[in-house]
Length: 193
Image (cartoon, rainbow, N blue to C red; front, side):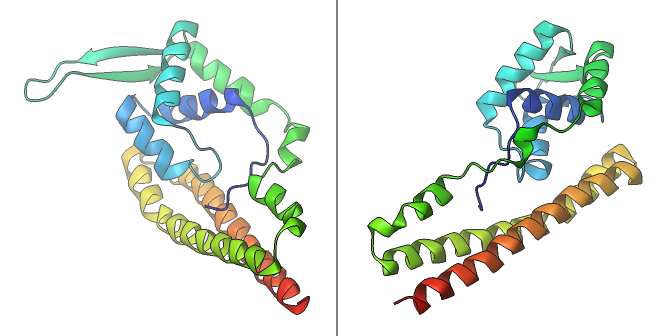
């Protein structure tokens, strides 16, 4: 994917999980899947991070869990948000956007910055690979519409799905901007030979 970190911190993972649980109780597996289906473009989390945060939030009293006994499969743990968890989510939503949101952190851009140390052809090849990854990311984000519709039906709310659609639209627009920039960068380098 077009991997550029535009800011944020570990607390946002907790808040993303609280936001998902605010729609209704979910197992860790369901949260992991919902995270990948909806938030992954702008906030990537490993499965292990999600479970670690769920445990920490339960200790903080922001959520509670119950064991669901199953006869034909292993038991599962279902999490639900608590009153203090909802209060924390609302407090976080009211906070102003941090200045760090507008700082870009990208290993790709760091490599491009120092690409004067290698041939133009090598750099063009890196840009072409980046372009391919951006194309794949746009295709994946276009599939998000199906996920948004599935979750919209599950929680029966059009208003919340509207915001989900806006974030997917941002992702598509952002990656298209990356594609446009990549094409211009490749042309600039090829013209410089």
